[in-house]
Amino acid sequence: MLLKDLGEDKLISRISGRFCELKAGLIKAIGDDTSVTTHKPGHVLLATTDSLIQGTHFDMRWAEPILLGRKSLAISLSDIAAMGGKPLFFLVSIALKPNTPKKFIDGIYTGLSASAKEHGIALAGGNTAKAGVNMLSTTVFGEAGKNEVIYRSGGKAGDIIYVTGTLGDSALGLRALKKRGRSAMKGPFKKAVMKHLDPTPRVKEGQALARKKLATAMMDISDGLLLDLKRLCKESGAGAEVFTDRLPLSIEFKTYLAKRADNISLALSGGEDYELLFTSPESKARDLARLSKSLGVQFSAIGVLT
Image (cartoon, rainbow, N blue to C red; front, side, top):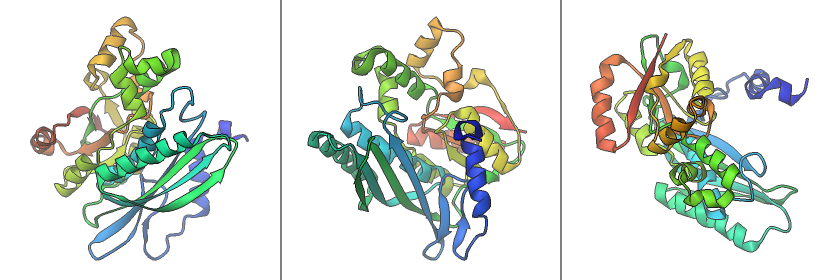
């Protein structure tokens, strides 16, 4: 069987089946947004790693090095946010083609540095290498209260399904980039383009949901709402009903839809939204509304666990 026939989830299952034994200090291994290990009293250590590979995750025709650096850190920070954690420090490994301009390399680290300062984390080390294709990999460590960390497995039938922000913008932005190249950054879908190139990890939102114990299960949306919701449901042992007329869509996305009635699929499975997907008891709706207002970030109820 080839990798393309196996698929990512089945590959991960095959890997986890070989490393299923939990050692002392390892609380959660494969199956969530981060690993969870013992840390200082009352807290757990979170760790996650992600890679951006040329030709798969970014295209050199429109890759801005500063934005590429920012995104590489943001997608790992999003995993920490999904556990309700506080990011602490990170590692970065970079593999570059020998003819890569110094200016491009400097731009990547400028972007990494800017994102790190925004979130108050430090670079602890990493690796550099030559390669046939450009690749950037980040590993982020964070911490969370032992009794506050939010797993994918806590959802229960009857819980309301929520998402932060809007869905589908990153996929729309990527579609615009493929059609118009760099000029899409100034086109009619420029906000969607920037959401694809420079996503915002919901770190503060994740921490607030954890601290106030408002979420029963949570993860970030990296591979599209439907696929990631399926993963949350699997871990929680539940099903889900989603109401597509309740999906939060941006003005740009609605403008796009007005001309194409069949592309709601971008909001359902487009991927790389890096919004939070979480569940919460119906009794917490007012508390969530107050938190949403105080944070200035939309929380949308889009369905229910069954």
